[in-house]
Image (cartoon, rainbow, N blue to C red; front, side, top):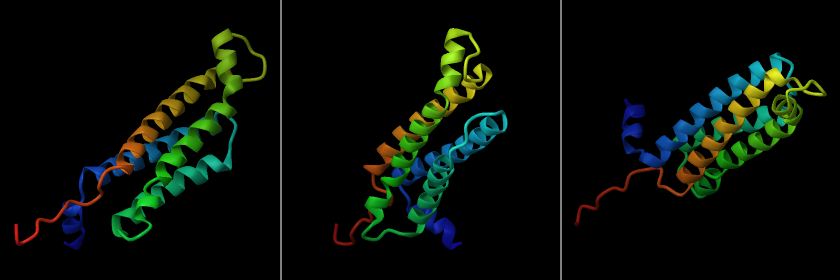
Length: 143
């Protein structure tokens, strides 16, 4: 029951973080499929996505001094994910655009595009949520 009470105290800002965490999970799954298909694997992408999920989970319980700093972590993690997935897939994208086979796998370019879009949407969602309150304001009894 305490969990539901805590959820009722959360504002739109925290629910945007939950959307970002859901995008993290989807991105992690698609990145794993991309790697299984022969795409380049970067451990930093896994670390960034898992770190983002962990921070959102911690922000559910923690509202202390470092909460505002921790709120910026998911946006940074999405930016890192975007950079490394595009950098690792530049050969795939180039081969797809030019319709040649040089040093990438043009059939994997679709994954690079999807990962880029998910990362951009996740970044924007996290950045907006970063500047919003995570808990509702309580009305004072003297008002």
